[in-house]
Amino acid sequence: MASETFQLSRREMLMSSATTAAVSAIVSETADAAPPAQSLPTYKVAMSVNGTAKALTLDPRTTLLDALREHLHLTGTKKGCDHGQCGACTVIVNGERINACLSLAVQHDGDAVTTIEGLGTPERLHPMQAAFVKHDGYQCGYCTPGQICSAVSVLEEIRRGIPSHAQADLMAAPQPTGAEMRERMSGNICRCGAYSNIAEAMADVAGARA
Amino acid sequence: MKSFTYERATTPADAARIVARNPGARFLAGGTNLLDLMKLEIETPTHLVDVQDLKLDRIEPTDAGGLRIGAFVSNTALASDERVRRDYGVLSRAIVAGASGQLRNKATTAGNLLQRTRCPYFYDTNQPCNKRKPGSGCAAIGGYSRQLAVIGSSEACIATYPGDMAVAMRVLDATVETVKADGKTRSIPIGTFHTLPGGTPERDNVLDHGELITAVMLPRPIGGAHVYRKVRDRASYAFALVSVAAIVQRDGSGRAAFGGVAHRPWRVEAAEAAMPRGAVEMSKAVFAGARPTDDNAFKIPLATRTLAAVIAEVKP
Image: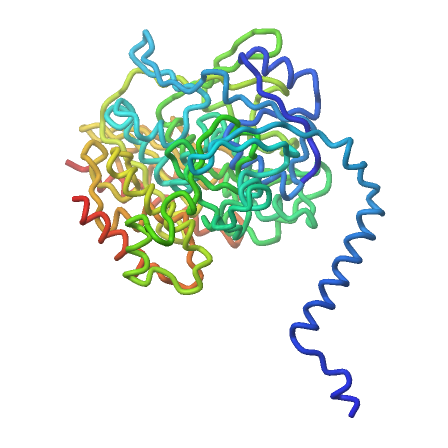
């Protein structure tokens, strides 16, 4: 029957759309008359990533996020919105968490970067990773590497006395209360809504320290 | 993102010279706003001059008893500084009310002053916008204007300055220090740093091309109770619908600047004499001549009530 002959599986459908998209991308690139690749400038970038020295030669448009994922193949750090709105790309640079999507790799020449891969290993989890597992701090897991890098940094920021909007007294040392941690985690969005379990995981780790 | 070249300048005057001689060049500090706009091709610089090596990352006391905040000091470092928390609490409060922890770690003092509007029509390159493309028109007027300006706007533009930090700096009478390509420096009072849109909404401030912010100066502390109250659509990580930065003295006199209502932090010094008589009277003078749209007229009573809440909060 005709309807069976033309029935495509979802996978085939996606593959054929991808082919169409690839063809149109080639057409538009030709139409734009993009300059040949060899004329585009590149720059050398040396970083310590998870304690290992890395040297890259990059187009300056490469974000820190793309350098980590596409050039160093550290795909634990995720690309969510790519505009600094979701926090999925959160990594720790020179001890401070940032959005890797809103930073050029060339800005980080000489910097020390820690990604989710550098916090712990499957055999030897970071306490925050273990707490996320214990408290079910995720569903789909896409935002989780960013949540964990942020959560580790949040407890460190509280320890260092960095103030937050949740603080009643700016001169008092901030405490790892639920309100403090929720406010400080507001730059990490979780589409699945695992927030309450993330808060419990963080409280568990903070309590162990306190 | 359009292709560009990149370099790191070594001195402030050097950075100013490089940018001044190249119309396509821009300074790059934290990059949290500029890179976002470059990805959308709203900003298309051909050369970026990174200012991270200029040693502008210190907060130092001044001879006048105030503080000199280096242009490259991060939002986190500024909000955390013990002198700022103690003597300029409104500034710490305003900074931590904005953005997220990740962004505040990267965003700088000068970059925050130069943050561009969040008007949805500025961001949508399919729409006319006089700020993005001079002469193309303003789709915000008659469009979705709930977040936009209620005062100081023009027929060409109703965008707002979106930040929090500068609203606190306005109430603190800060000055912005700059250097130009010829090495000349100038001090710009924060009240005249950001412009009103008028017929040239493409300008956000009075800086010339290639003029680099080197520091923000805070005068000697004036005491009083420091409050920054921000009203927004969610409790954290959202731009202000209305915000109030205020310093109120024991006798009820004080100063207040408003965020989220205009193309620059909005402060009317002449209205402040009315503060002891209450928010309604002061607000009338602050918002005299306001021209809200149907969608954002709510901001004026909201600002009045926010100011009332601030005054009530600090009452001894």
